[in-house]
Length: 115
Length: 113
Image (cartoon, rainbow over all chains, first blue to last red; front, side, top):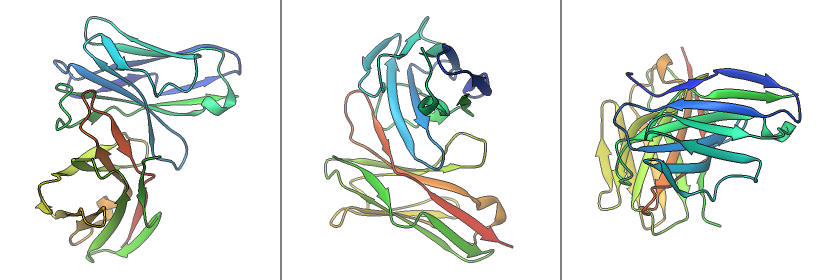
């Protein structure tokens, strides 16, 4: 595709339920990133993938959060037993490789609301 | 801890005027800086970047200035247009092997027609 896509665009769930967010990076991009953006706040780094491996998981807020990437392409971010404080916009970005000088291209985000 | 912050959380400018958005960073080891623009309901969009071996870089209607002495970054937008209304984020990249970018909280720019 032409850009990074994310699905769903919006998700409303009840507290305690699990949710799965999907990210399709730009074709050929080996690096993929997940960020969380709370209302009126900056971006909080969650996790980074280089290929299918995640060398840095330090940003995941708790063990309820997990992410995987298969085939070096699509990535899913799973939040188990969602809490109200998980409500935020979850942004995915990809870059050509993990070179620090490579531009990250962002998707439109998934807006998660936990009731 | 290390952080990137913005001096002005909101900024209103008249259409046609120049805008200046400021940013302070605290990590002297950062060697790459980026400005992103985020319009309502969209993901951040790359505007311009600058490496630490430069102090100025120009793009189309935008200029980024880097002052490493005082760890200050600014984004100048010439002849601001209504389409420039958005939240602007500065970000620093510490050039680690896994390419972690630290974003500031953002400045909301409103252009008054």
